[in-house]
Image (cartoon, rainbow, N blue to C red; front, side, top):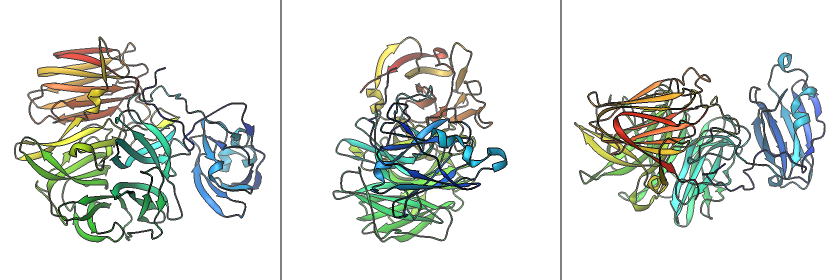
Length: 569
């Protein structure tokens, strides 16, 4: 099988192996109906933990030879069958003495049976290897994914010395949300990604929620949310271009008594020669200033009565964007919201206006809501810091909280969208974000082909209304329609393949086109369709799970050209 996303197997990111290097774990010490301990042997690199996704999380405290806790994690340890294994890397525990796992289960004993009979004890093994070979029918070929485990929000993205850095919310111990850690991948072209070691791991202040990175001299500074009993903001510094981080001894650097207090996004503001930071707090955004990234002063709040308030505001961003046609700049405040999206669940809204270093002023009326993408699977959108050529490049998490934990994959869950460049355009009396595939996607364009493949780009030229149907030999199909008179574009995935894992998944999504469209660009990967107006006035991202790739295309009212996406670096 061709492998388009080249990911380097590294020390902390490895997956299931079944080889002669394995030995079984010894018997546990049973302490009660829901409590056990396990003495960990030394000498092997990994302890492979068997996971059964339907079970509840077991809490595991990892203790060193002095009975000091060095790590804590939650894993759905297998009770009667194993779905997959995840690695606990013993070599990182830095213990010359024996390591002890203190394990508490939370399942109903009447249903799970006696703890001594759990499958995890028989299937838990030691190994020096852990194979990351893709086992997933739906793993994308040219979208970023983790080697294994769960991924959600992109975090801390920046560009430096020709390399794009992408951090992300990551669970190294299962393919459902838990144990939030910053995973890390790097790329030279925004398409092919290399997996790197874990960047920032949980500590006593909490798990590591979303945040951002900036460059301060030769250092890369990460500011992120520590999610413990309360959410606080912390800082870590890297002196090796974002490969490893040292947490600031003065953490937390910012606290509050508000429950939802998270996702800091700092940036250097040339206009005021100081740092600004935007932070999501409940259903508003708070804006801060600082001279040193450590001491922060609240300057203002934004959000009351503006936009959509059907869910919690999250993952903010605040930046200038150029309007090439008008030859001016405006500030854009990005606000991800969950729930409250135009078709249910999570989505990305934004506001256009002005920012003076202290206060953001929206130019639209309060009730105006603008969406960056009108699909179901576009969330937690944030931009790369320091992108070249003054570009504003964004990436989104390509899923929806309504069903993200249930999508039909196991080795991994979730991918990121293709990179997109933002601009501005006007329609009527309003200014909107334009969204186009980043120019790196043109570089990935391969040979012309006669029919769709599992990883391709389809360019469709239209002169008016058009109907577009992607289908396969099993009758599964996605129907798209451009209505030139109504100025709308819609995508129907109700018959796209596997839609039964969630009642919220089968749907029709519809976007305004803000005028006429002359060309569409569709990016097809194994489990996703991303549709764009070539001029950037419309974007729509939807997951699909066909039992076989779509290999047929019907276009009424337009002419299609199909390109392969290049398969190698």
